[in-house]
Image (cartoon, rainbow, N blue to C red):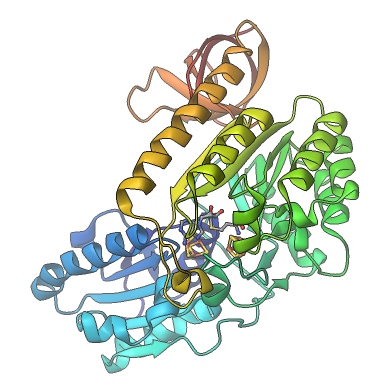
Length: 437
Ligand code: SAH
Ligand code: SF4
Ligand code: F3S
């Protein structure tokens, strides 16, 4: 096999952290002769990078693994690997359930992927390593980045917060921060490759503890030549300091957008979720942010159907949404994750109630999102061009500094250009406009 061009198909589920991990794995596998393909039939190696944050994410992965059975029968030399959060959670169970899986690699060892693949190539034996969920972060990385305009740079891994519903701390381990110099050099590397927009990533970016505060780190990266736009996610409200608000306000290239998951809008549920802030505290934070950063857009995550949720709690959440007026919200139905405290809580909510509440929540938020977007009609916004839309190559897409998606008719713009667009139409999740000379 050595020296031959081998093909890798990478399937990535879950959050941005998994996208970044996949790019790193692709970079490591490139060094041992694997190049990326989109074609399953052509692949010599398929890796599924998995998510287990909700049952639906796991179901998708099991479905996908099942489908590879036929592929493997047709091509016995095919190597099939499972990495990521579900690999970390399930370990050898995955191979027990699907013996056509060759290897299972936990989140703390994804930097070992090339060594693991080589050993499977040689020995054709099942391999499982989920031994160190809080494994060391590699100091040198060679990511094979997807996209061409915007890219992710992880700054910390893991989570220490243990929200009672959430599996992430168990499958991502304890918080570990990268050294500033390593982050800066990776940012410069991405800029040298042509990227214009950097998103600093972490389960809780603002709990960064790599020898300086997250606010300081952000201010440094803001000044790196070639970083035209700087973003970060995800922030936990408990760690959103005044210093960080000031860094966002003062940063020239730091975008005016904060994704600040609130999860719920009643104190009783927030406490049961172990979110460690109250509705009042969150509202004060929002007020402070909006005072310091004009034009800021705020987005959030919300979970409905948490155990013990009453009509009264839910009504408080709707009132909360109307009070804050988020630009957008990602809304989820609570999914019971075994091993987390909330899985054993009494008064689990039935599916029908969960769905009814989700719909109501989305309706309220959609109206707010639309109202916020409508307020932008006739204004001129700065858009970073991403490229042709998926459905029509005469329509291009890009994003505002507030991270709003904008569609416009293509003239002579290129991916990576910063252009001005006058907004003419608004929908819940996007804006349409015409380019300004
Ligand atoms: N570290 C980030 C993201 C965690 S996962 C943060 O703290 O915000 C992304 C989102 O998934 C969470 O914000 C939460 O809204 C949702 N989520 C996590 N566990 C869940 C569960 N058991 N059921 C439903 N949604 C969940
Ligand atoms: Fe999960 Fe909470 Fe950690 Fe976010 S902060 S990853 S929701 S435990
Ligand atoms: Fe999913 Fe793991 Fe991200 S559980 S949301 S891929 S950290």
